Amino acid sequence: MTNKRAVQDKLVESGVVAVLRGIDEDDIVPVAKAIHEGGVTALELTADAKRCSEMIAAVDRELADTDAVIGAGTVMDAAAARNVVEAGAEFVLAPNVNEEVLKVCNRAGVVSVPGVMTPTEADRAMAAGADILKMFPASTVGPGHIGALQGPLGDVPIMPTGGVSADNVADYFEADAVAVGAGSALVNYEAIEEGDMDGVRERAADFVAAVEAARE
Image (cartoon, rainbow, N blue to C red):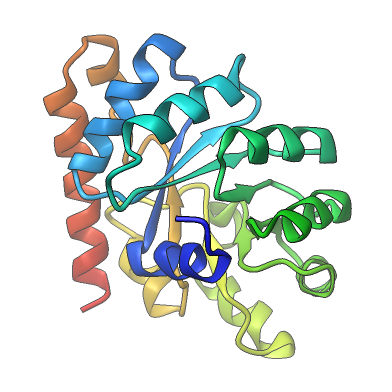
């Protein structure tokens, strides 16, 4: 999938982005495959990992014939943005707002999801061409902060990340999140250490079920 609008629609339709952080290169492909088999279509590999570009490319090849979309997270500067885009990332996330990263994404036709907390950051991100706003860390402010941002700024698309779990995901969707990002609440790291891909798949499926129930 290469159309930017189609990728953005896919992120919203999916409802959840799996944050794959701190996973060894040897494990990343089977883990990504198991999480996708659990029903997660949007996968984020963090750019602070060694050989992140190679890992993105490997996962992209493995899931090329599926409905998966592969992105990169923790993209802090323009050089990192260019590297992950060249590796095949279809969306780029960050914990902050960096206009140079947004420029790279917009020029490449890649969905950008910068991190924001305040109305000033949200306005700055949208003015620079952001597609979705990553409210991070969501656990610090809770679901009510979505409305606090949208109040003065209008119907901006917000994806809470950081502290979102199967237990509270319904609260975020009720507050008008377009999707959520989830790490350890969705990614079963103990199962990964044990090589238990069934356990990885089951945790992902449980989170997807919670998302689907929240959006009914």
